Image 1 (cartoon, rainbow, N blue to C red):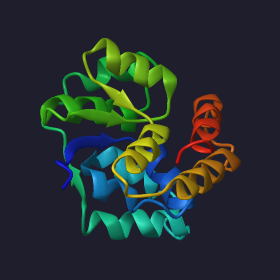
Image 2: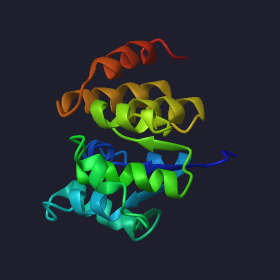
Image 3: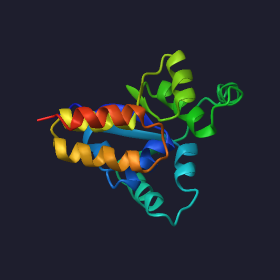
Image 4: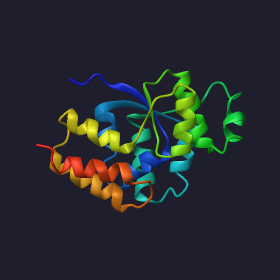
Length: 168
């Protein structure tokens, strides 16, 4: 049995996994929390299938939390970090999460400089494979789907896809 780590997520990875129909990987590996601003970002177009799937998850395994200390928020926003990302960084520190799931490199770099470990959606796929939640063929399919979305930097995903094609 997997000891689930605590992860705070930004909006983009949730949307990316929902679009590829693999949002369900997250609760199989992690306890997942998001701040209110991230939930709001995922619901910007509430009629879209990914927004609907994320809203359903919020009623089950995805816990939406309000950040307690807002004093850091303005400082992060001044550093060209979006509100959802800033709240995610703060929430990660407040609940002492193991990792912060995000795709924005600038925000990830800022989070790391504040002592917050970051992971990407590619890391989620790799962990799902390592824990035998998905097989190599599924990993390849998910990675191809994520790459084909063209909404994130895919160099890491492309390298991971090449590795996944050789996994047993």
